[in-house]
Image (cartoon, rainbow, N blue to C red; front, side, top):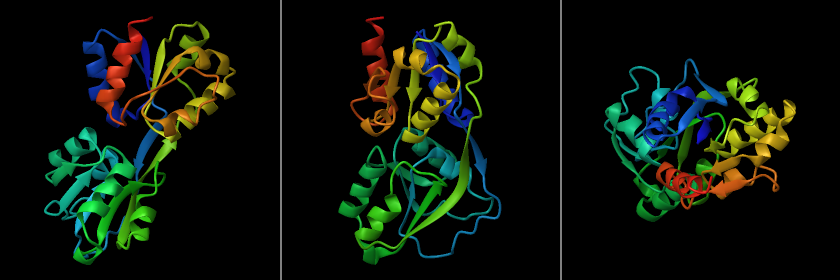
Amino acid sequence: MRIAVTRPEEDAGPLKARLEALDHEVVMAPLMTITPRASVHIPDLPWQVIAVTSANGIRALPPGHGLTSIRTLTVGPQSLKAATAAGFRAEAQGGDVNGLSAFIRAELTPAAGPILYLSGAETSGDLEGQLGAAGFACHRAVLYDAVPAAGLGPVDALLRRGEIDAVLLYSPRSARIWRQLTEAAGLSAQAGKLRNFCLSTNVASVLPEHWTRLVAESPDEQAMLALLAQKGRSL
């Protein structure tokens, strides 16, 4: 299949390699650009754990942050890989924001200390709110912005010619941008006929109901690739 990969360039490299190893042709179509924020201040507190829901939360940390000795909880293999590569004592728990929140609420106690949450300006879930409602002191450090793409890039012409088979969508925000850009380009009908592979039901819910939407069994890349392999056989 010819597949549009919409992840930011910082995240797309390993996915592109995995898809090409499965004999797919990949078209890079990043829907967001990651821009670290300058002069971010992280309070010096006795953090119980660090929570990370994106690899970019690790990559955007300012130099000399001094946080690597603190237990770090990530949501999946990609954020785990970024954290361990940066020297953190990291482990993956939960699979997504809600799963990570459930793990923290079940396994940790508010009395053990505050939680540092590393995030971007926009998130797919409310980890800070969920933990706060459970009595945890959670400080959210906003480290980066994910700036939406202005257009579809090379995917535009391929869509017009009917030369894209599928698109991979990993977050509600990327799905929203995908929908907006295709609609603005007059390509909504073409996008709806693609196999829109979605990481979760939350991602799929952003797309029009009449579009072809395929949802992974669990919110992780392995499940997404398994779905791709299953549905790709019928092309």
